[in-house]
Amino acid sequence: MPEATHLSSGKVRELYALDDERVLLVASDRISTFDVVLPTEIPDKGRVLTGLSAFWFARTRHIVSNHFLALRPDGRSLECKRLEMLPVELVVRGYLAGSGWTDYRASGAICGTVLPPGLRESERLPEPIVTPATKASEGHDLNISEDEAAELCGRDRYAIARAAALALYRFAAAHAERHGLLLADTKLELGVDADGTVMLADEALTPDSSRFWPAAGYAPGGPQPSFDKQYVRDWCLGTGWDRTPPGPELPPEVVSGTRARYIEAFELVTGIAFDRYLEDPEVVL
Image (tube, rainbow, N blue to C red; front, side, top):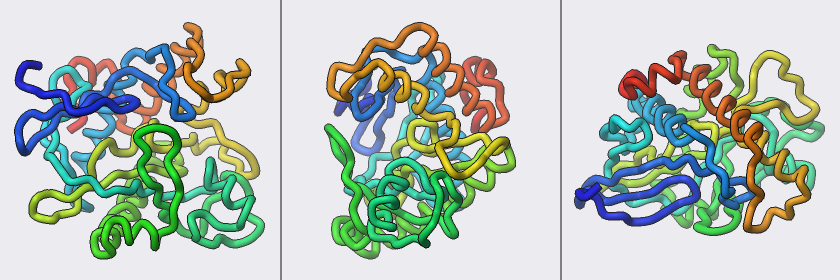
């Protein structure tokens, strides 16, 4: 891309500057687990993430503005408005799972939000909660309290971002439930444009940033099958890997199984055949 200047590499995405006002987000097929990028790629994973993000960006502008400008024909690149990113991620949780379940068992609270006693793993919370985390360029993100997040972001900006995150979660959870899915939680990143408008950015409601469960067979009291990276995590842990680089090579059956899960998530959420998206990415808009 001779018109683009490479700015940075993330675990999955490459970021390029197109000009002073636009950036290009390119989603690779890399997969990370336990914050380690594995040596084996998952074919079409980047296109799933890009297509789902574009799908949600196009349908949530009435809730909060976002940075999406255009979807490129490769199906894995988004042209976006350049923003000043908030220094925290907002995780909205509607169910008790993952690190939230770990924290709850230890203290009865998540990021300072005290929850009712006696909740089970994967149980639906009385109301969705926001649990912020700092952004780590390497290693694990660190959960923080909402007061700490407000101090980092500025209280007014954080209040706007928090309200937007909750509204986005409720909208997406209702959509998912109509399509046979439960949205257990989702990680959202927001930024601010030159006019001071808080906007949704990065990716939106993908299997990498969200925990989707099949609604059929949902049974609180233990972990649920999901369309995120849990399949890869479980396989990696089964090898005896100690979660430090380098990660293990994935065998063909794990690659194909993971690809199938990502594509199934795409098709369930959008109602669009993935092959149709490959032929014409703008079908998600």
